[in-house]
Each structure stands twice: as C-alpha cells, then as structure tokens.
Length: 505
Image (tube, rainbow, N blue to C red):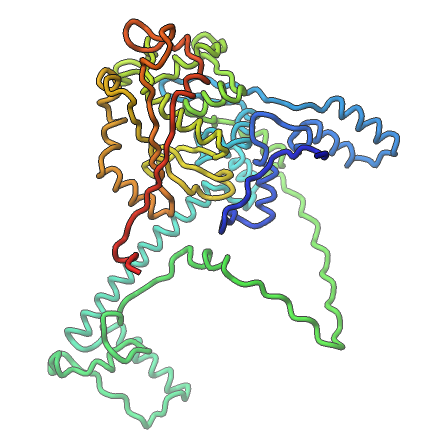
C-alpha cells in the first residue's frame, strides 16, 4: 500500500464518546497533542523541516523549478527525529524535575507525561502570567477552576440564606396564620399599585387576613397567606431551589441548531457588515507582546514520577537523568537502583543493596508499563483515591473513564513472609473491603469504572542464580528490564456499585 505514513493514527472513538469543546478546539488539540513520543515523522506539523518549508512557502510563491529544488533539498534534510530531554533527580520529592521549557513542552504535549509544579496538569504558569500582562481575556484551566469554585461557594451561601428565609416564612404561617410583617407590607404595597393601575376592581373587597391570636391552627384559613400561585399548603410550598451557577452552562450544549429563515420574496438583500475598526494603538503603559513575554521568567518545572521517568528512560529512550550532586548523567544501568523504594523511607533515602520483586516501584511500574504499551494515557489517580487513571487520548480530549487500583498477588508465600514490604500499608490496607467501598463511592459519583488490577509478583526462585544475591534479594545491576517486566502478569476485574433501589427493574 503506497502513500505517506500518517503522523499519528488515532483510535476509533467509543460509542457515545464526545470530545471536550467544539470541532475547532478538537482540531487544534489534535495538532498540538496528536504526535506521541518517541519518534517525530517528517509529515508531522511539529517537525522542524515542515515548519521551515511552510514559512518559506508562505513568504513567497516560487517557480516550479525552484520549488522542485527546495523540496529535494528539504527531503534530504528531513528525517525521523527522536528528541532527547534532560531531567534532574530529586530524591527528597521522589520525582524527576524537567526545567527546560522546550523539554517540558515536548514531554507533556507528546504523551501527557508529568505535571506542572504550579499548574493543575499542563505547565502553563508562565503563559498565564504573560496573558495577564497583555490584558487578554483567555482563561486557563486553573482560572476556570477558581471561577467555578467562587460561583459554587456563593451559590451555597445564597442557598443557605434562602432556605433560612423560607423556614421563617413557613414557621410564621403555621403558628400565626399570616406572613411576616415584611411580606405583608410588600403585599399591601403591591395591592395599592394594582389598584392605582386599574388592574383590580376597587369594589371587590379583599378577604381579611386571619390572625393567630383569635384563630387556632385547625380553623385558620391559610389561603390568604399562601405565596402567589399556590392553592394548598404542603411541604413543597416554601421549598427554595435557587439555580446552580453552572446550570446555564450545562444547558448551552443541549440547544438545537436553529437555521436562519429564508428571506421573504421581494425583500431587499441584507446590508453588508461594516469592516471592523482598526485596533487601537497600545499606550505606553501597556507592554507589547514581546515585552510581556520577556518580562516573565519561568519559575515552573515539570515533575515526573519515578514510573514516568523510568518509562521515558528505559522504554522510550528520550530522557537522560542528571545527578545534581556530581552534575553528570547517570548511566542507564545505575538509574534503577536510585529509583527503588527503600524498606523504611522515614529512616533512609539511600537505595537498597538488594532488589525485591515486590518493590512498590516495580509493581507500580509493571501496571504503568502494561497500560502504556496498550495505548492508554496513564495519569496519577490520587485525586480519586486510586493508583492510576486511564484516558483514551489524553486529559485535553476527554475525562478519564477508568480508575485503576493495584492489588499485588504473591506467587510464593515464602517471599511475602521474608519481604520488607509485605506488612506495610502498600499491601494490607488496600485489601480491606472498607477501603474498596470508599473507592467505589468516590468513583461512582464521578462516573468512573473501577478496575481492580491484580499484579502477580514472581518468586525470587524463578530468577537465574546469577541474578540472586546471597542475602536473598536480586542484584539490580544484573537485571534486564525487559526480562524483568516479562515475569509479571496483569489481570483486570471490573467493579460496579450495586444499588438495590435503582436496579429492581
């Protein structure tokens, strides 16, 4: 089959899958985030040769001979590129920091690796500061989140005040048979205005309002004290339901498309719109775009977890880890011992002398590597009390549909008894049904499916003798990561929260 190799082959959309935003936003996101690591094909719009050719073609229209010679030279220079990013190991935070802006954009835009230290997900702190200096009206994810939080907080305050006022009205009606003085005054003022306007016949006398001092609750007529538009007094009479701040925003996407009606025959054509006025010249107080970009210094870094860093370094080969103590790159064979979890992190941060197959980093990386190799975007799930979240394309395209909870399973019970990690919270707490119920309740409220991922831990006896140490562990310097990951197995079980009252039919 001939033809150009596609830059990125998106998976088919799932039934009912809808990307966040409109078509134009989806197209821009696909152009920005649609080229995953590690390779960059020449046909990609992110390729330097593509950018150079597009800029040269837009500058002038060359002749056929010049375009043929330029395309020949560009084709010779175009090649598949594999980027190289640099990260700094930070043992205190158990992460790898990427400080170069170009590397930060490469890792996040081409696979959604890492998290901005001053942002929710994508490192956008500097761009937000530049937009503020420019006076733009664009809102980033962090600004939208803050605005929604303020609206929800104000909504709760207004709802509490409305419920308190409604409770006072209901209590006044049930005890005295009349509305409070403020409501009676408002009603009298409304009747006076209606009489002045001629809406109500002046000869018709209004029924006298009952008083609680002379009438009992059993004989009181509440019809005059009821709110307008109601005929009976029940529990729903004084129920206040203020509109949520995001109600109009959610209903905006459900409106149908309204086509403009055709013009009537014989009517004059609509007048053309006047051209927009030229932009006003910026004053001396407002900085230009270049000045605003240069005035903001980058204080944010991209923070990679150890699983992401080891996947980028070993599986993709695009990350080099720098040792801040010696200012030298760590050899690939020495990276894994520095990332392993010590038996007691509170006492020491030094890497252990021996490696155990049930090390939390290896178990977590086995799960991470498994789903990354299947094409899923794997992100941290600490926000929803789980280990990982699975995205079909990435967080900018849709919400995560699945939550992963890792449950290790030992192949040999003797290894569990001798392991320093078996009695920690990493393995015992997550096996309780109380914790499972907590996770199911949290994730069911956000429409996520919980996947219990059983990871089988290989026994130490299954490894060759040359890889084992006399102390009982494994030698990390003699381990091949490909061979090691091949000894783990992953099984999934999907959990669904059962509601007896909702699933009877």
